[in-house]
Length: 496
Ligand code: NAD
Image (cartoon, protein in one colour):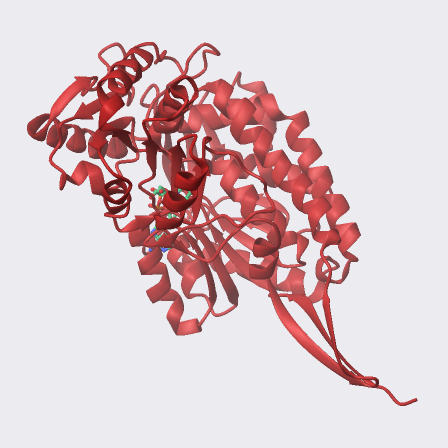
């Protein structure tokens, strides 16, 4: 069977290809031979036929991961040895970054420069970071007397299920895989059905890097009643790390309750950018535009509402619109393109339904419709709405598209109330030169992350995650390693 990477090489990347599961170190079709179609959202054409994983393939993958955990070398290897292999995976991602970026762009519709400089580069850093960080972490020792010590240390969990979304496919999968494997677990990844490509390529890379068979498995397929749900209900799966929609998180929590698994959820968001009257507008405005439209607005951390102090509202709105006008929407494979296609027809229609609400309720300042130049793909014009009623659904619900409502405010209390008036609590970015105000407002905002005079600044050691309906738990640095391990205390009494 040709490997997925070689197919991508030989076919010039445009020909319809086949993507298989990766179970116990080998690519395999589904037992039934059934497949589903993976569509290139920029053209509407079929990119790949993907093996359709059901309960059977998922159980095979879990069994392979269990065997690798119980009998294989991985959990018994010294941590530094495991991290050497993880580092090698990161190196190989960088070596093959052009192919990986191309596959990510064909699959998602995102601009190639974003795939190359954002998603794929970060995927490599996820492995490099955890390969360096995991061995640097200390373990605790408490002393209760001259002859008594209590050691607390991490042990792996066993087989872990990783379920990932389509908006940052390889980036978010590797953000889970690297710490999961560093801690000595084995895993089964269920990538999003709309974007299965780079997970399959990663499987090939892990084998090349020397990861033992069964340590990392990929099962393709759907969520509810499919491969995803089987993972969440499987008694041998000890934990689920999930990133995706809030409603899916609720379904997973219910399904996992029967087997009482450890759960980590990174869910939806409705981020806000706040521009105060003393903000440095030359920095705040381009960042607010980037925060709203990067990845076609399909980022959980997107600044998908822009609150502007009334004293500078007209100026900021005019400058935002002028910058939005200049966004180059086009062929995602063109390096000049700044905004590509939305991920799928279904998602595009969902975003269009919000455009219809915005057009009926408020003022569409720019955009507001499908992009006429690309009728076969799922392109939407970058859109700005103003004068929406405060309780508009566009202010509260996650649209996950290039749609930005701009909202005026007068006081700190008022803007904090409006920012907090969604079920979500993931992130916000506030712009002001008054450090006391920044402190007050960032304290008042109910979110896991607040950026002050910046957006998307990240240190991978810091906790990443959301409050309210945006998630449970934190990822990043020691928080990831804590999730992917079980603490054990061993108390010693010595005899002199
Ligand atoms: P989704 O919830 O529809 O799907 C995510 C994954 O879950 C897919 O692999 C899907 O097959 C699987 N799934 C669906 N139903 C399932 C079920 N019942 N049981 C098990 N698995 C199931 O999410 P999506 O549409 O792929 O991604 C977009 C969402 O992800 C947005 O809400 C976005 O905000 C969120 N997201 C959050 C973060 C974060 O860090 N908080 C990051 C990226 C994306």
